[in-house]
Length: 289
Length: 174
Ligand SMILES: Cc1cc2nc3c(=O)[nH]c(=O)nc-3n(C[C@H](O)[C@H](O)[C@H](O)COP(=O)(O)OP(=O)(O)OC[C@H]3O[C@@H](n4cnc5c(N)ncnc54)[C@H](O)[C@@H]3O)c2cc1C
Ligand code: FES
Ligand code: FES
Image (cartoon, rainbow over all chains, first blue to last red):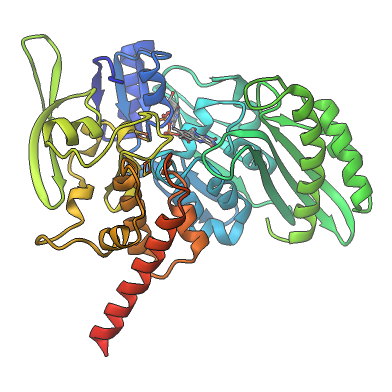
């Protein structure tokens, strides 16, 4: 498989990258790790005439803790860099665990967190856990900058609210009050398989009582989905396996799965029930965020 | 911004300088050149294999700045100024790497098509973690598909290579 001809730009900054995207319009696209876009170009799903490299930009490579703000993760950070980050291991181990469940080692060394979000595939592994932790996204364009909750970034399969000249520059996982979180991926193999169902859960416990909770479902609707009715059921209640089973049943009613080569819609629905229950149990019992 | 020339066909070509197995190559490539093709066709390093061409099989695994990546998804222009190690870079002075020795000793490969990729994944593992568990070995080569073997001899050979290099090191120190 060969790629068609295109031009390649290596800007020195995010600002220059946005200007290039603005100048050349829709025929230009950003490339970070290339693990989605290069494959799509090979399959002729995309045919950009210009690629603007952003994966090399140092300003997109940071992972830092800013007191009062939270953990800031640059969009150009690779999945293995997320997995191995001491800061994240200490503060949000569940994010490292989600990154570790992606793809395989070779792909994790190339693919970036910004690319995973921007590509906006319903089965993507990073959105559920990041949404469950109330992550916000900084978006920079050639003319303006804005910050959005990650939850509001997705419009549909392969579609985000990003405008043509805009790039995601960083994610902020805010200092929160969650006491536990987790992401469970159910794929057909342990490695290199996309999620049939992915469930992230985060909880804020007060003794045995659930003060607040998030349940975010991947691969079972056009965009990552908050199971809000199930979340509401949990609030103020004593944690128990029966309660989590009930939340699972509600969540499986909230999702909108499709049938495809990996699984039927019915099966996905039932797995949402099972994995929601397990994710809640794990988030409550394991005691790390 | 990478330097480029525009050819008679109107297509831009970029000047890249890439260190492969310790040798620095300065070449002119088109933007659509993939690292796997650059290695195989421009440098004649055909040890790196090409199979699925979409990141699934790991036959094209090389080390980029010491980390295993699928060279079928990497644009050659993006590797400008960086270091690549291919399977040809494992042996030194005609002496095989311990992993290669152990692959032979354990008859790890059958057809051998996946072997260069597995060698590179295993090499990256042992550089980072000289004393891996079986689980860690299996995980490190999970991105390398082998359609002949059941991975059993590969896993044993890698564990044996790790043990043997530990022994050699201890021997030297003691
Ligand atoms: C074999 C294989 C297995 C995989 N397994 C998984 C898996 O298990 N789970 C999973 O979730 N994904 C998986 N993927 C998909 C992919 O690896 C990830 O989505 C990866 O994170 C994409 O990041 P990238 O940097 O490679 O993106 P690129 O391919 O560089 O870019 C993807 C898209 O995002 C845009 N983009 C990139 N960065 C930005 C930014 N900062 N701002 C705005 N737009 C941007 C690009 O223009 C492009 O349209 C797999 C891919 C392969 C090849
Ligand atoms: S040829 Fe590159 S991963 Fe299969
Ligand atoms: S030995 Fe034939 S593919 Fe692995």
